[in-house]
Image 1 (tube, rainbow, N blue to C red):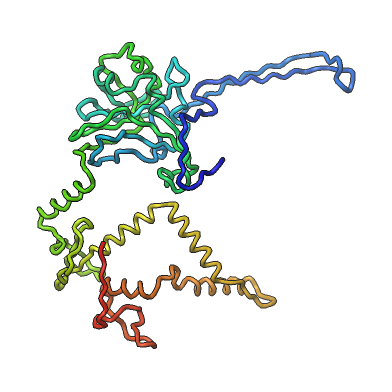
Image 2: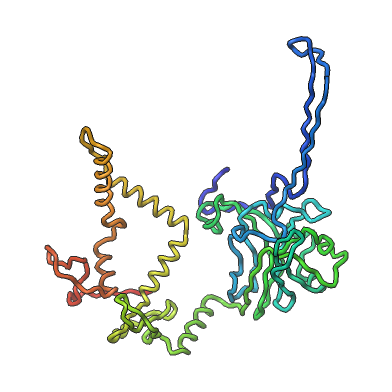
Length: 403
């Protein structure tokens, strides 16, 4: 399989599976022949044996393994300006939408994503399926079904497959870079709450054709989530609104919020926190006794967690560190007649020396970090500097930072 160059995404109308869900007959025919010559000339057929075997290919019908869903948009339980964006779900298995077909067609995908106002439909959970499994259904009136469900000709246009280069979107939890995407055909309206339902159309071809729509349409739901659509606006407008809301609660660059806080030594205290939108004052007020400003520490921790959630970044950092560590060890030098125990001890000693400071943090960064964390200076080392690398509080060095 060809791997794409970084940043590239290839789109496909669909990816057909080797076999669609159905029942197949496998026929094996064996012919026994007799020939009097070595070259089998004039061979005569003595008997023909025929054996039939039936194979059923069955995938998901009423339930979908949660691991098959890589991501959804809008995010679950979120609120935002979604009035100009079509919702969609990204599926791990690239053939999933085309593994069944909606009869009588052999090419209409069996999955559809429905955008439904919370007042338009009823979601029922833990329903007993004909095969004994429990699943979820969504029920709506005929008028809602006509408005929410796509036409048969529209269903293939709302499904497609993608091959995404490593490190691209939707690949953090994927294993081969191939995904399937199912989109909705409706746009949300501002200031409404919605259910998003990935439904099965396998047994509901008549509804897609609009030929005979029952009074109540009930469909199996394979995955669903909710969100709220708010008013639209630019980032500047949203950011200004956040700042105004903060000011309404008395928060500003010079007046961060105060929260109950447990310090590292286990004693109670007060934490001062301001978000990145609020910013920092040119001359921030000094924290009072028992107060700790955790704004920068919170921003730093959030950045580290975001980086740790990026699987490709973590993999590249680990590979870089492994190459750096191994190159720093150099070739081993074992004396003649070394035992396996000697080799193990030498290897442990070499690795211990190489990993004393595994990330190679510069001394300047260490000193700045120590001062921001309020680490008390230790006794001077041999060169007159504190042994932990922190700058003494009376050294006159000013360290500033903004989140």
